[in-house]
Structure formats: structure tokens, C-alpha cells
Length: 319
Length: 319
Image 1 (tube, rainbow over the protein chains, first blue to last red):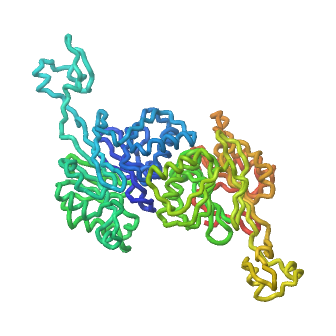
Image 2 (image 1 turned 180 degrees about the horizontal axis):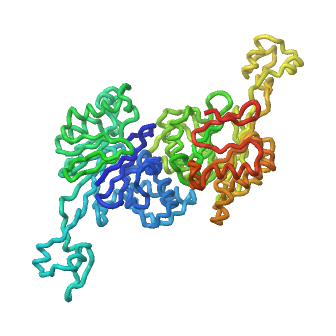
Image 3 (image 1 turned 90 degrees about the vertical axis):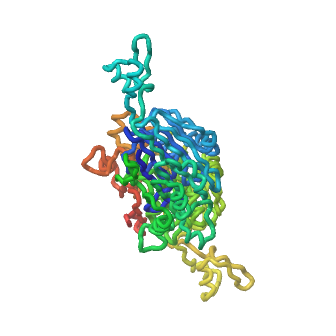
């Protein structure tokens, strides 16, 4: 699984960072998933190899505009790209009418079926590759994190079972290995019943805005990657006295350390943290604050950077 | 008056061109007006000296998403910038509920009054500096052009009138020259009554999508600049057989020549016209087609380029 950050700024875009959007990319093939869709997400996609035709589903963490105002344009452009595959859009129910009305009022025709699902009602979303569930967070409005768990990663034939059931080695095994349903004597065999994952499934959590990282205590158990906002540093919150329902780098780092999170990715930085380390405050202040409390593998997300979760469980920058 | 193009592509953004938005900038001071607001307009503004606090009004030509999907984000960011001045937004009535619902559903608070006006009902919009009227165009949906006419440009004291009325030269003239109301004997004199423009007002027309340039025949009389879409070239329309309610460069150029338009600016180019002249079709094909029919001052708009309408009536690139 890869992560490609399309927007890593809080609230408003800057020249260096767009508002929130994160692509979760399948371990093999070209399928991908979008978490949040701030304005300009479709523009960022132009600067990546991701195709809107390979987008499997969109997940929106909460109603704030910097997480969803890119939806109308992204959907319209998906339509103009000739996409015909249905698209599932999981988002707060309060946004459903706005999405529908935007398409209708703008006379936008989508040549694919758009299925709107309420995130509040989501127990589990899945396809052949991934399961997605939610974890409730705490913000000024209801907000969730999305937990992506691989299903049956890199499947291999369950040879002990095949042998126990007396299914003879040969072309039949090849068909079952491809997941096909095949006739064997009077039996119909479903290939998926004879496939087993060859490695543990990876689990990645991509969170919406949240002022209480401890709400992730259960979800973070066994997760490979936690992507969490760090809108402010402690120093800034002490000076301004307000958090607007957001977390500090220190609070997230302390939680991640206590929960044993292996890879922590911070994102959604206030626009005040500048890229230039000679200016103050800057993004190094965020990193430095997190490193005081967290000894695992820390990443500060940057727009258009892609990270690969390797076989060794380490999250590495790939491009 | 200046024009600064924020988006010059039709339908979908490309790496080089954003979707539609054009800034019309007052001849003096920092006030400006936005015509259309495709997604990413606020991002483009970050790359200009224009401040969202100096934005006097927004005008939307028609309902299509590439002309309005940037509104929710622009308004939200205007709010976060601390703007308190009321903002008038003139747009098709069909979009009013969508704008309101987007702000409400996303829990966006605007610290300024947003006044929505229906473009269909607009007879005239004006402030101290400009008058804006509309001209009806022809497209797949109702579409207009906005005609910006300066009011009382570079006012100077009407000395013959002052002398005729026996108002004595002195500090009183200075106050009237600043437009103030002053007491003179038993009379109250309004400075604006004694100011006259020192040059003819400039008139700039910025059009929405339109397949019938001839609809501008009356409006174009005496206009200094006509900004019009040229989505396609004739060669492409002949091959595809469809215009989707758009104009070709040839049709707009022929009209502008016949109407005696002094400065013609083409914009809203199909994404197929590439910047690289070695590829086909490219933007030079659009220019070449227009030049066959038009002998005036032709400009092909580019994103983030600013053009100044000089005293000599010529539109010049300034940055």
C-alpha cells in the first residue's frame, strides 16, 4: 500500500500546500482511494500518475470545506474523462444534498452512477482488496478516521487443504489460484476458498480533524501507519489559547508513542508553519516538537510526495 | 483598467491553465471584480498581488461548474482572511441555494454579509467607480457577458461651471475637488456636481460561453476590449461535428473585425490546444485562425498574465 498526499494544509491553501486530500493506493495494480477532497484536489491529481478512472471510492472525514469543496469539480471532471464505472462516495449525510444540488444546478451530467453513502451509517465498506471501517474522533463537528485493512493480501494456494480434500495437482490448481470457480467431478470449487494470504494484511488509518488522539487507542493496535493532523504546535496554542478542535504535534506524538504506532505521519499543518526554516514559526518546529515525544518512524507529509509501506513495515518516501 | 486572467481553459483544468476566472481591476487603487470563479480560483489568487479584501463584487456568467465551483472555497477563505466588508455575488438564481447550502452544510461562518443577486434580474450594478450591465449570449444554458463601464474617470473640477456660478477660487475648490459637500454662504455644494471626467470612460466586456458572437453587436460598439471564448478552432469543429454551444476562433474574429473591436482577447480554450507548438493541435492554431479574420489587436489570454488598457486605448501585457 502506498500513500500519496494531495493536500497537507489546514483551512486555506498556500503556495506550497493544498487543503486536505490523501490517496491510499493498492499494493498491486492501479486502484486507489481518496480520503477527503479539498478544493483543488483534481488539480493536484494532474501532477501524479493517478487516474480518476482507477479511483475506487471517496471517503470524506467531516463536513468542513477544506475537506470537501473539491468534490463537485472532481466529479464533473471524472465525468468528462469518460469514466463509466460506478463510484461510491462515503460522506456525512449533511453534504449529500449539497453534492446532488451542485451537479443538478450546474447542469453536470455524469456518465457513471454516483452512489452516496452516509458515513454515519458505515459499518464496513469493502471490495475484493480492502476493508474500510471508521473510528469516531472529536472535533467541532462530527469527524472520523478511516481504517484501511487489506483483504487476503498476495494470496497463495492453500496446498494443505487441496491435498486434504484430494484435489489433484495440475491445471485445476492453476485455475483455482486465479480465483476461478471450476468443476471437479460433481463438485463446484470456488478458487477463493483455496487461497490464503501469504503475509499479514496491512492496516493504515487516515484521520479527519481531531483534538483527542486517545480516541484512536483501540484502532491503532496493530496498525502499520497512522496519518493524523498536527495543526498546531504546543507553543502556538499556549500563545493563542485556542485549538479550534485540533491537535498539537506534541499530543499526537505522545499518543503514538504510548500506543506503539510504528509509522506516524503528521499532516494538516496550519498555514503559519512556513517551509523556509529561516522564518518563524516553520515546519521544523512541528517536527522538533513531535520528536521530543515519539521515537518511532516520523514523517511530516508534503504535497505530492508518495510513501510506500514496505515488506519490512517501514514507510518510505518513493517520489 | 487592467485585466488579470486567473483561468483560461475550458471545462477541465490542465497543468498550464485553470478553469475560468477573470479579474477586472480598477484604474486606480486596489479594487477589483471577479468574473466567474472556477475551482482553484483562490489558489490562482495566491500567485497575484490581488487581495480578497479588495474584491468589490463577483459576477458569474452561467451555471456550468468550470465557471462557479470555486465559489465555496473562495468565500470560506475570504471569511478566514478576516474580511468584514459586505460582498455582492451576482449569479444565476439556480446557484443561490447551492451556495447557501454549501456554506451551511460545511459549518462555514462568514464574518461579512454575503448578498446574493440574481443575474437574470440585473438591470445595472454600480458603485462609485464602475457600472456593470449584462448582454444575453447563447449557450447550452442561459449565459451572459458583463459590460464594465467606468464612471466619471479621473475627475477634474468643472472650472467653467464654478466660475459661472461665482464660486470663488480658493480652499473651497480644493474641498469640492475631493468630492466633499461644503457650505458656501447659504448654499450646500456637493463636490460631485462640480467634477467632470477628464477622459472618456473605458468599457470592457467579459463574456461567458457563447456560440453566437453577433449577439454582442450592440454592446461591442465603442467597447475598448472584448474578452470572448474561443473554445475550438474551425478545423476541430469540422472534424468532430460538435460545438457544445461554443464559438470557434474564426467566428469570434470575424465578428470582432466587422464590429470594429479594437482589442480582442480570446480565452476558454479547449484543453486539446497544447502550449507546445510542436504538438498538434496547439494554441498557435487558435491564434493563426483568428489572425486570418481579425486585423485589430489580438491577445490570447494566459493564466496569471495581467494586461493594462493604456491611455492610447491599447491593451498591453504588464506582467
